[in-house]
Amino acid sequence: MPEPLQIPMFPLTLLPLPGELVPLHIFEPRYRQLLADAEMLDISFGIYCNHEMNTEKLGALMKLESVIKRYASGESDIVLRCIDVFSMDKLYRTYKTKLYPGGDVFLNHIDLNEMPGVELYELFLIYQTKRNINKHFTTFSIYQIAQELNFDLFDRYKFLTISPARRSTFLINQLKFQIHILRQEEKSKDVFHLN
Image (cartoon, rainbow, N blue to C red; front, side, top):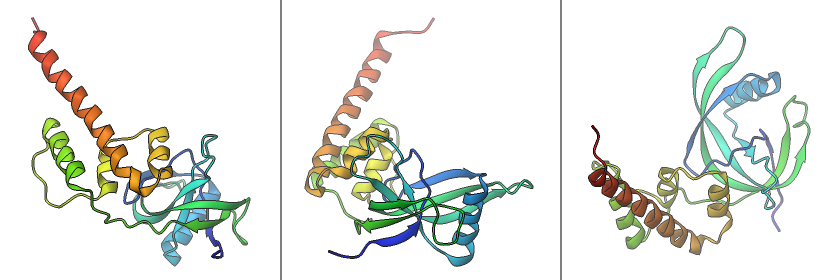
């Protein structure tokens, strides 16, 4: 079995999906220190999903994308990008000599460019059309499709804990449901007229 990787940790009730951009407001001194280290040392760190349903101890490996705003108080608005998913082995109150937490993790080594099958891709294009999004400048990975569906925490967790072979089926079912809802909305516009 491979050795766990020790990384800085930011426990939150979030579970970012691979490739997803996540905005955060940083205000606690320990996480200001983490932000400074991420900027100066170009380190990645984990967002551990601190929720009781997280029995698999999942988290997301994050990389600082940009600092949007710095406040005189020392607070910051930042954007992070999820670059992988991990399973937590141990969580430590502090990381080495730092104020912020750390953890031992096993990375999943997600392929951020994993392409969907034909059925999933075609359903996604129908979904986009129903939402009046018709211009596409790139192909979509399976993780970009998952991001577009705006999953709640439970569905994100389910998507990441099922086997990779079943993720496409999960997304197909989610898309079929969303397309059904959008079609029902279209029908209701024909039935109800505003005065």
